[in-house]
Amino acid sequence: MNLGFMIKITRESFGFTQRELAEKSGLTTAAICQIERGLRSPNIKTILKLQKAFDGVSLDYLIGGEYRNNCAKCASVKYRISELIRDI
Image 1 (tube, rainbow, N blue to C red):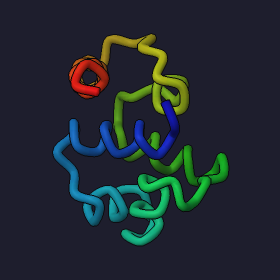
Image 2 (image 1 turned 90 degrees about the vertical axis):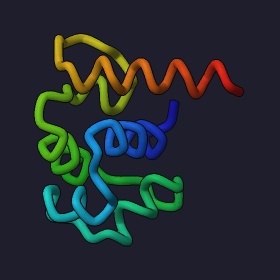
Image 3 (image 1 turned 45 degrees about the vertical axis):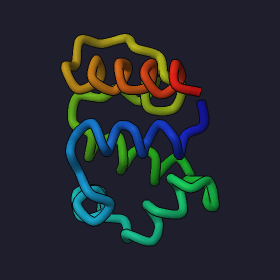
Image 4 (image 1 turned 30 degrees about the vertical axis):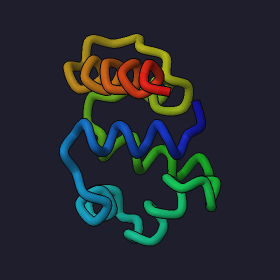
């Protein structure tokens, strides 16, 4: 899975709008939109800001979809991804 997709699904699972994620991460709404759509590749500093905004989501999960912690939101994201994949 690509990073933009993971960020979008995680954001939606947390119930954040793009604007809310932008505020929590210190990024612009336009940057969030571009990252989610795959129009912009975030650098490591940006990825870390996003990971911090998703309190409880591990960095390895965010960048690779690896479910390695017991975060309830991570379980929600994993379930949502499996539903989306099943529908494809």
